[in-house]
Amino acid sequence: MTDIIKQAIEIPPKDFYLIEPELFTTLYAMKDKPDFITAFLGLSSWMGTSLRSGVWTYYESADKKEIDTIIKYLRGYAPENEIVGMYVLGNHHYSDEKYQDNFEYPQEWIDESEKIDRWIFDNEEKIIRFMQDILRNNFEN
Image (cartoon, rainbow, N blue to C red):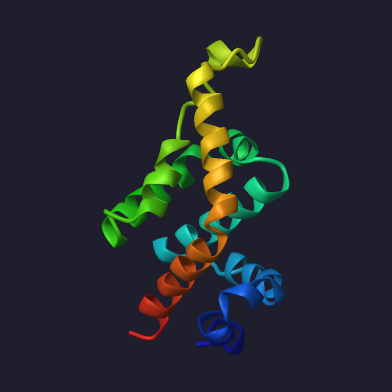
């Protein structure tokens, strides 16, 4: 285990932002990432995008195959966790051809993304702890 991963596991959630850029870069550079790393990076991007520009941007631009991998991992890792439910809630077919010319997405999707953004804002520390647990459970075992 690298020092940055050890720090990420041990740092208080309120200070996680101090090491997250280096951690993200380290994990992103890994070749043949295991699903737990893909899930960690996805959750980090999901939360960060939501806090900066809205979760809609995350889902609209993320690779659908990667989102499916993340969902599969999260459902196996913590199927009853509220974070998993919120992540799955925003998963729609944004790249469907019928939306590409007019961008007239269903109102339900827009409402869901607003709900997810509010939830992420209110639960940032809980999400960070969950992300730390993913690392802890996979690197310490």
